[in-house]
Length: 507
Image (cartoon, rainbow, N blue to C red; front, side):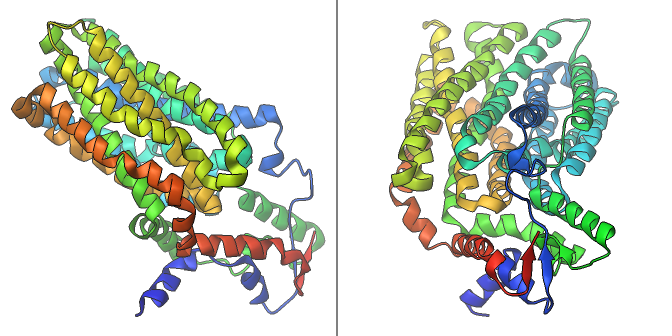
């Protein structure tokens, strides 16, 4: 099979709406939203949009805090369950890998069956995994619960970007997406602070950390049932078409998604292959995957190493090191403010730079990563005040926040309807690094010391620093050579002409 034919076969996941209708051989009355239709997610009221955005971000916060609070409460778990440090580290890494693998199905599958059912199912199951973790009698049960928690909690990271794209127009997504990225990273610091306070109380310990997560998860289950509405427009149009057929008895009323609908098996294959295809063939997805993957791996290394580093160098106890992790939240807040300014730059320069207008502050963040790491590496010493490495951590996390948000917004702009699939491919690589990096963290710092281990990370960050600059200047040319991008643009162009095609009426 030639390269072109192979690519065409893979891109069957990007069907052209126009050809889909023409292949039916009969007249179809296409059910679409009317101008100003309140059922269109883009026309939801501002209050409803923010209610949905904040609810989904709350789930992201719960899943993010569950990662970091586990790490800081691991010592009491190790002592009670008589397990090794490697076993507890596996619980951290396997939680992250669930966030990488499961979105391959849930992100694309939700594009076909709807967001709300996936949110409901995943939130209930995630709550049950937290109960399982709190009651775990041994480390094997802990690892199993953490793995399942990552599987079901992955919805919080993989679907939120798609949900925001469903209800906000491209020029409106800056603040909601910034809030999503902020919640993801702020919650990591907050989880560590709460976990450190609980861990320091001899009457509580690691199990109470998990019970706090159970309580928060139960609150989200109630919120998602009460607040969440379906945001996927194709699903809403399908429901509208069914109601129209039932009311009129005319089976010609169909939504575009219903015409030549794929089989369930074909749907699952597409759902799994589309993100992998983006990851393996799309330079934009590959660039952000490698860059954000390295960054996310370093964040998980810090979750493992900040506590022992400050205990060893400055004699901090677990409560004090828990508050050091608050720098992650402070950095996330600084990144949020920076991203608000980035959103202003995007609106100012979109006409000339198009999607690359999202990348101005990403170029600044590329410099923040090595600078922050070098500050931590060369100031973490008993002779230097502990505030110096704290400043370095804050600078680093500010850069991470910007990169995290830019990755979602830039890919959403470039891949439009299939943004969740592109983000799922990027998420797979990023969270795989979150599994791998902590496995060698202790050995690396034991061999190289914190100073030279963090310096090594800083040098790698310097090597990757040109990534946003290359995309800023050449991103449009790279997209022009992308078969997937061309296919999406062609489908969008054909969809805009559908109402004038023979054999298709619009209602």
